[in-house]
Image (tube, rainbow, N blue to C red; front, side, top):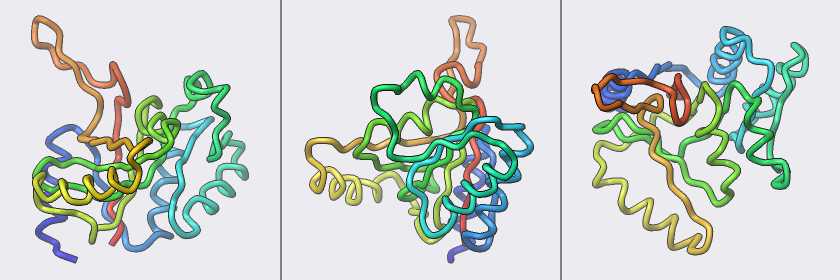
Amino acid sequence: MNDGIVQRFKAKHESLAGIVHLVDGLDAAADRVFSILEEKKAAKVAITELPGEIGHSLEQRCAATGMNFLKPPFNGAELPAEFDSIQVGITWAAFAIAETGSLVEFATDDSFRLVSALPLVHIGVFQAADIIESLSEAAAPIRNFYNENPLNASVSFISGPSRTADIEMRLILGVHGPAETHAIVVN
């Protein structure tokens, strides 16, 4: 792992009001995600497909504490209303970009995008080895993803909490999406 690129990503993401956590391994990532859920006193959480045992571990821990846990496959007839009551969404990012401090998520199911876009808190998890330096380097993997999924591909760039500014230029976080974002970088 290149510590320099991780630190550049961290500095940029934090400059955009995101919170970055550096952890060693998927077990530590699951521990950190669960501690955030406890800190936020989450009653209902949703996840997309997560690698390894992280999703299963989180589901068991949430069940043990009484948290309502929503996972794929989602019931399309009940979306997005089902997501209105979710406090925290947890997703896996395909990669991250140091230059912009962005997590990049690929989806072929629109409901997966809701997990990162609708809850008040979003937690994005990804491998440190998957951080690229610049936005221009993102073109090739994005193009490949679209070529492999020409009918239903969507790409999301997540660069901290949702933000908007009114005519008086007052910046407000969380108006059109998460008010708080966490990037968990797995070494």
